[in-house]
Image (cartoon, rainbow, N blue to C red; front, side):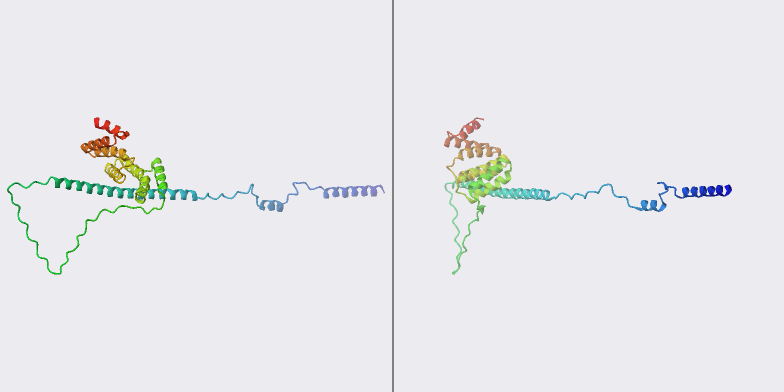
Length: 274
């Protein structure tokens, strides 16, 4: 009987131990199955931070406008230089024509007298003109066309803009604008000041022949103008710079004689003494 009871106890203990081993808790290490590891390794890694879109390039419209404005300014300066050169050539041609006329007049006044006792040859008879013949009309020598501006801008605005260009040292543009005033408004009161400015600009640029032509044109257009004494002073300076000191002296003597109380006359007296 004791042996039977002892055998039951042993069997019970054995069964209890098997149950303990069967229900042992699964640790964290055991729970990591190969499938789970594979799934975790296959999952895509999320980006740390979303990349910002690239900023678009700033528009280049301002640079293009600046370049176009610069090219336009260069073209305007080139046109201004061409027109100024054309006007200077016209003034020089008029000056040469005037000088030719003066030389022809001097040659006529110095024509040799006919010696006494000399009988000039009798003129040859004119050839007979056929009946019904109409001689062609003599066409006069064409004169140099004057440049006239077609601008509709008021003279006051042209003069103001021209003076502003002079102050900004844009001399070619200033000459172009002032020539517009001279051509469009030859009888305007501002014409005298405009032409004096043009001539003075040419004088500063050492274009003495062009300056001389414009100073003389000023005196011819406005002989009693307020700028005439200053123009005579500058005419003498142009003549001296062109190598004609004797003519410059005559011009300054005329200035002193005709405008003795002017500031230009005082300067002319200093030049005559020097």
